[in-house]
Image (tube, rainbow, N blue to C red; front, side):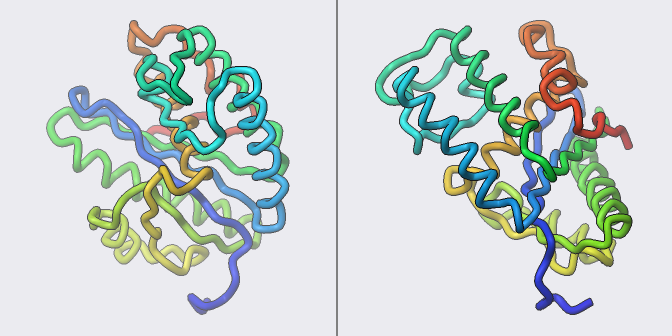
Length: 220
């Protein structure tokens, strides 16, 4: 397969986890190229509603960890946490409603070395994506949140050489990508579905409840 061939979908990937416990997690949101414009339109409609109803500018970066913790003053105001929770769940529902999206979450634990856990989780993620793409007869490109300084993605891709993913992930900062902000929210919910931190009990069931068609998080 030539790296110059067009791909059928793009997977947007974000990581999450809890370094102090050794939990490392990756989530990939796969967007069919043919559906990308329609999905973006649905997301923009959501952000426009937030602007009207909550005063949050459409261009405000949605970063789940800070947003749900009540940090930041989007548009100069500070929505109550309960408002933020409802908005996050609404965003998950919009993501879940888009036909053709493929959501995959993989995680692992290594209490002795979080970096090793991240590498193992990313390796497993690529294997799962490659298998699913082969079953569907598709190829894909990868986009990951980052500034290009993380060598893990190139190294794992080079070692694994997934047949349906011709190129290693391209790093893009999340503030520049609506898609990565979606992946960030899904990854954060996936993390809490696994970690079940007491102070985030309110969202333990979000992943399963609001993303019913997503694969359950897979441990490796």
